[in-house]
Image (tube, rainbow, N blue to C red; front, side, top):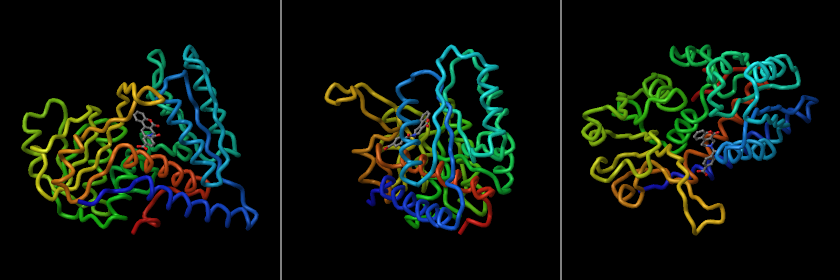
Length: 297
Ligand code: BQF
């Protein structure tokens, strides 16, 4: 069993990004600039945005954090998006999700200029991704594909089961695993209503778990020698921690790991790669490019 070290892989890639940024700056170019909009004070969102700001520093990027209280009106948020769309000093920006319930998140996403949509959530990027055109690919699926490649885990022609059908992870992950130039796999998507979920998993060469239920994937669901990718990052209370909680994945790691060829831990697996791919997308945006064919293997 090989433990996939997402934290180390992300650190390597961030160092590569930083090198490129310093080359750009030495040639008289401007540092890439990522802006983030954070609404409210959700603990998870605070942490995630902090991770993004720190990653910008590691990559030599400029970053701007724009905060709003959770009673912000939708029009104010849309005005902020519009301002960032038109701000030439900003290469890319994100709106940290989830948003408060009184705000139409889809409307906010659609207000983002797709050329600055480094999260890859705008329908133009989603659509372009789905048909294999250059686009911003959402960071978590891109991070997982990067791990599979860097660890030389074969995907072409393999049976891949994606657990979860969210717009952020499950759906784009399944699309990319299907595509010839990415996973080139046979893909099955299972979700909370899937009757044959366990049977599908047992036949999978690769399981990508993104359902947000701690310990959902148990040893009896995993074929001997399968590769298991754990996208879960649920905060569960833990009195022994300073923070009062710990991150729990969707995979019951201790019993599943011995059966795997490869497995990602939580924390330190997919999470750091998500942040790192956001940086890569921002670098592409700063260079006026999409994450397209050109940068693929
Ligand atoms: C790690 C996210 C659910 C909903 C909205 C490193 C992150 C997490 C874990 C992180 C996530 C999850 C992010 C680890 C960003 C991933 O060491 O294991 C980094 O910051 N993430 C987000 O921005 O929004 C979310 C999960």
